[in-house]
View 1 (cartoon, helix red, strand yellow):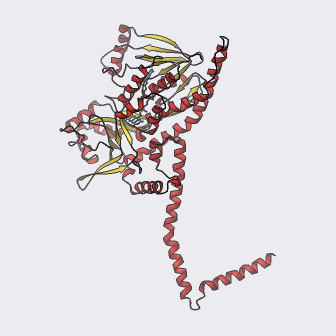
View 2 (cartoon, rainbow, N blue to C red):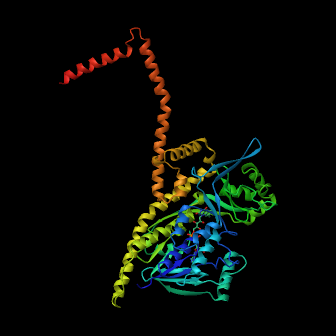
View 3 (cartoon, helix red, strand yellow):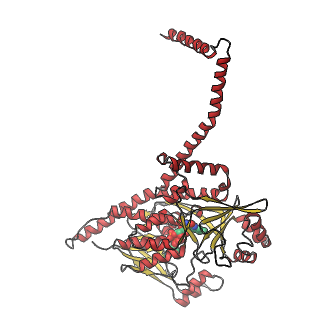
Length: 524
Ligand code: FAD
């Protein structure tokens, strides 16, 4: 069969996995990435000071397993740290406390992984494939999805320096001095995995009637670093995701292999502005809201330094549809559905996009043996037609799923920063886990375990959890009514017995019976 030329835009985790799937099917794959090679130590990941730790869970792992790359998953998992639950931190009457809340009644866990480490591992696998070519420092600047042509700007080091530090160099000068150039690339199929501010999506909008919705939530995030203890150990339990819930905001910490923690402060923009206006309040703010962090985990001077030096970044939630145009292009990962990070599913969902997409592509793959040269045209049509059907089905299935996890992620912010300390939240978790444990056939499971430990479609998870909530509510109302019904029954029984004739209830029943009979006779 004629090889298809697949151009992948973006070599982040999703683009890299998509390239692996495409290469595994024998297609000619070209990967274009705006930045330099991540494996080169001088490449600074966009938006991050270093790299961030992410929660990797079942969907991401399952998608890597299906890439058909022997040893890939094992190598990735080797560089992860299991997190069995949340550790909630707080203070009561001046005393620090921590409370562990397991993620799953069966002991299943999520894993802390270094985003750059995972990304590099995927790039290493790609490097081994003879049908994959990398084009780093190439920025997509234009695309025609009817003619299947794209244009990339070849970026110079000076231009990158300008992007990192715009005050220190002039982009026009940089462009002129290094002579940045544009290249035209032809393709059969383009996969856009170029992140939340996707250029592929921007160009796709000119071809497809794409509905698009984006929302910046009123929270910014800033990264902090908790270094290992003086004895080179973890300063906190390494097997938890640590949360300091603050009601309207929170601070979290995720373990790293070098025994440090990557922490994140999530805070409304107005609160960041208040601290910016009075920087001396930072440590107090931490002491009041995140007890045990300032001084114990991060020295006060480091806290101030990191707050000042690390960017305060926005959080965006994006929904759009369709994800494709005819047979030419599809967008995946953050490019299609960037979400707030509170369910730890952004990357997992993006990796699941890849698995789902290729399941549809395989289902509609033409099965033509090229007998003679004239068959080529027929074959190309079959590729195009098959891919078009696959992409239509992909968009149809994935749109509600991505919308569901976007919404769940937004709602989970409330759970992490506040509900984790509420008795009602704990009661529901306890009941659902008990039902799941003792009556597995009841189908009950917590929302968290359905999302993080299974591969059920996100839209199905959302519906099932709502149904479960209605059952639980009826159950709780039912159980709540039991004492009243029992008391009423007991009262009637006493009243019947205490009645002088001993015929209280019997007498009323007899009267009711004869009246009904009289009415009945009138109608017959
Ligand atoms: P990206 O990682 O954004 O990669 C896109 C790539 O495309 C980049 O390499 C970029 O340089 C390149 N690119 C961009 N524009 C162009 C262009 N014009 N031409 C060529 N290349 C281009 N997810 C989880 O699953 N678990 C978590 O615990 C988690 N925690 C998070 C915490 C925070 C604070 C944040 C911000 C996100 C978190 N996420 C988490 C989400 C996760 O980081 C993203 O969902 C994931 O990185 C998306 O991968 P991607 O490959 O789609 O996009």
